[in-house]
Length: 167
Image 1 (cartoon, helix red, strand yellow):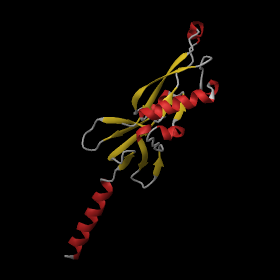
Image 2 (spheres, helix red, strand yellow; image 1 turned 135 degrees about the vertical axis):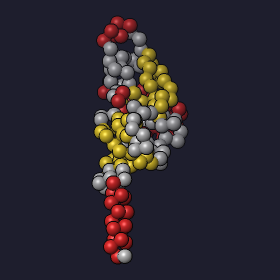
Image 3 (cartoon, one colour; image 1 turned 120 degrees about the vertical axis):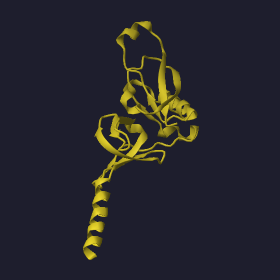
Image 4 (cartoon, helix red, strand yellow; image 1 turned 180 degrees about the horizontal axis):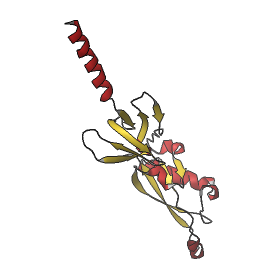
């Protein structure tokens, strides 16, 4: 009888380890029990054990991955913006990969005295204006357009940047 009980306990423990999965923790609190296949610069590719197709999430949506080995990999910090008062928390980037998985909240039109070729060429008051407008939209990331030399001849002082956020 003791042998049967011992075998039963060993079987229960071994099935628990076989069915162990990775856990993706999203910023909205949702936990996905999946198998993480690989992580790229902007996405996490995973497979749900209930079906065989691969799926992906943008890194901006994910707080951390807890692997079945117990290792925890932090992915991104959640930026909480609750109105115009939180404008200083807004992130300004020129890398479009940093917003994969986020929702476009809107566009921000800026008039500047010169062409905007990147973050280093923007005046601080223009950045402040952009961040305040993005905070009103509920966005937490602003993506600047990349530099296009063909636009130089147009002499347009108006630039359009995109604001992204969680939901």
